[in-house]
Image (tube, rainbow, N blue to C red):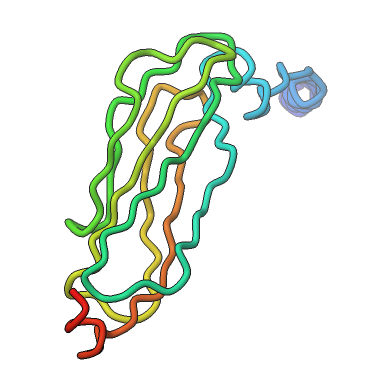
Length: 149
């Protein structure tokens, strides 16, 4: 009798486990869908190359973006990797379909060679943080160019 009861309990557990595996789960929302259902930041370009510049030059570029989401986009902060880069950005909420900017000023004093600086945009975008980059090659300041200045 114990074997029959144990067999029935075992069969019930197996049947219950099998039915639990066949139950459908709600589909996970894809990141693109999340972005459509909240604020979304879309940049015209995510990298700008200044080419060759001379050590000590200060260059600036303005990245333009659009809120391609359905709710207002608010940039909380813009982070940079070093003190040589100074950011500026649209401070007021950017409504859906509207545009804003993130500007980066790079001071090449004390820098040499290839430089790639990441700028991190912290906002309420559904997809999380966004990144843009400035790239340049800093050449040594020659005595001829120093005499011109």
